[in-house]
Amino acid sequence: MNRHLFSSPTDAFTSHTATFGPIPEYPHRGVLTGELAEAGLAGRGGAGFPTAEKLAAISGRRTVVIGNGAEGEPLSDKDAVLLTHAPHLVIDGLVLAAREVGSREVYLYADEARLPNLERALSQRRHANSGDPDVRLIAAPGGFVSGEKSSIVNRIGGGPAVPLDRRSHLSESGLRGRPTLISNVETFAHVAMIARYSAHWFRSRGMNGAAGTMLVTLSGDLRSRGVVEIPMGISLHQLLTEYAGTDPRALRAVLAGGYHGGWITSAGLLSAILTPGSLAPYGASPGAGVVHGLGVSRCGLRAAAGIVRYLSGQNARQCGPCVNGLPRVAESFEHVAFGQSVQAHERELVFLTDMVNGRGACKHPDGTVRFVRSSLRAFAGDVRQHAAGTCEVGWRASGFDIPDAS
Image (cartoon, rainbow, N blue to C red; front, side, top):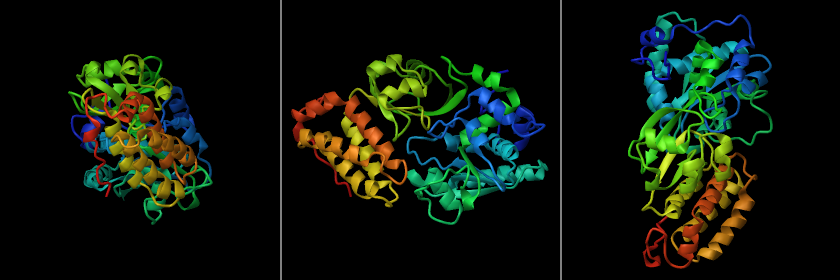
């Protein structure tokens, strides 16, 4: 039978249990971790870290489990859709993980708009005497960095949702100094599916040697947009034609992985597949499940400049690379994108990205640098054209006006 994350006809607990059945019981700890390792499940929040390794790394007493549904990535809707239409799969995964690591303290961190539906779901489970540990809901404030792991720990601990310059692993010392497991809500939903249907079932759902499925948000200049569940390892060509209904020849590039991802230009759209290894040469990754199309009539540098300016403003103002470095990167990128002293500002971007990379209190500067470098590489032809006062898509230099960044 073809099971998928949205198999349940409604979001009600009765519909969910009728569709998927009860949560499996394991005889002892370690069995679920072994099953997840065999399944090859990796995190679906961006970093793609193996889920079994996260569980195995948790040691100590009074452990904490946190589901991250903050979804600060502007181009992603997958977590919101999942929490709206399949909240019980996420809660199942949280419960299974809590049992595996011996936790009685479980949190679900999500956008405030999702909380009423999640509270209804938890109320339904309490009414059904499901025996779950108490799951506490925490509202995630808006902002790109609010879903970063240390931001979540800081917010649940009573502080602001900003990253911390951490020296210890969360698996050893997280919330209030206790061992803490944090994973994306989609990851927990897959945990619930693997526990029911086996590692072999999960692996069989991928393509080209990849394991499982993932949720992807399709956006931009694509004919079909929205959230879809796709096989991991699918080719970008097949994804665009079959799921997005778009001829790849109508696109200049695709942004894969979101604002901390990278651009894949027309040649790559014919050969790349949706795996970390295949996308790495482009400075991209499956990341947060974002595939954003850029049409042939759009200037890639102009599109990228708006993203870089956004990222420069989405910092916690806690370290030099964010406070000083990213605004200068955004300013220089805008000069390149809008045709003013292009060669000098391109050289400055190389210098600035080298200075910023690896020096931040969190990974936000590094992700911004990765996006900038990918943009300059993907749209190198535009850079040359802008330096000459023209553009590959036909604009003239006289039309290049840098917008007010305020």
